Image 1 (cartoon, rainbow, N blue to C red):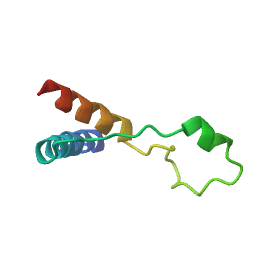
Image 2: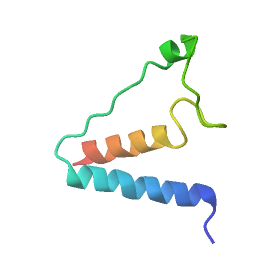
Image 3: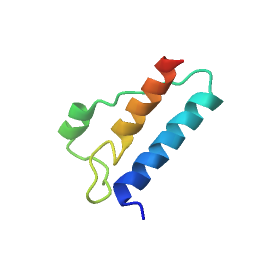
Length: 70
């Protein structure tokens, strides 16, 4: 039975493959995290998650690798 990490990794691999196959142009935006941290009244974030969320960096990395491999 797969654990949570394996399930998340499998989903990210499938998602990044689908994004690259279905789109001719993919744009990924870097957020100004330091500016968001300095904000005195930030919007509430889900408990236990950072500004980027769980797996966002991994998804970005996988998508970039798949895009440049072609």
